[in-house]
Image 1: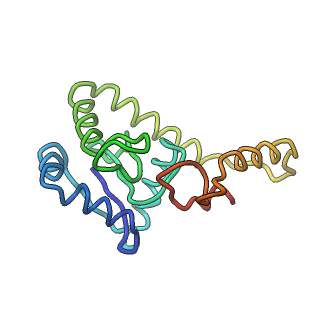
Image 2 (image 1 turned 60 degrees about the horizontal axis):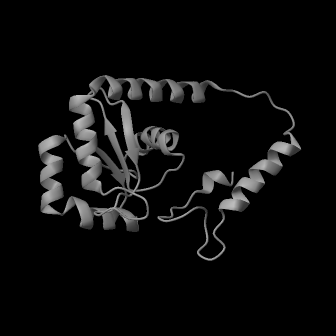
Image 3 (image 1 turned 135 degrees about the vertical axis):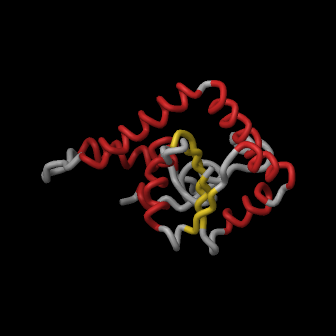
Length: 171
C-alpha cells in the first residue's frame, strides 16, 4: 500500500487524521499490507510514476494518492482521497482496504491481469509521439463542450466532490 502526499496538502492531513491515525484502520492496514509513505517533494520520481497509473485507472489525479501494488511494484488499484465512511459516491477507506485485500488473496489472477494491463497501457501511452500538425476544429469543440458541461460555476472547478486541482485538463 503506497500513500503519496506532501506537507502542505490539506487533504493529505485530513486522510491521515481520519484514516491512518484511526486505530481500527491502522490495524487493518498493518495486518493486511506493507505500508509505504512517500513525500512527493522528496521523491517526485515515485510520485510521477504512480500518478500516471492513478490517472490511467481513474481519469483524475491528486493528493493524497493511494496506490495498491503487487510485490514487484506494479499498480493494480488506486485513487486519491478516500473518506473514513462512504460519502460523495466513494467507498470508505476501510471498505477499499478490505476489498483490495480480499481480491489479492482470492482473485490473484485478476489482480495480476489488472496490473499487467495497466503497465501495458502506460507503456503504450509513453511511446506515442504524434506527428506535428493542425488540430481538427471539431475535436477542439467537443473538448470544450465536455469541459463546459462538467464545470461547476457555483463552487468552481470541474465535476463533483471531492475536488482537486486538475490543471492538466486545461493544458
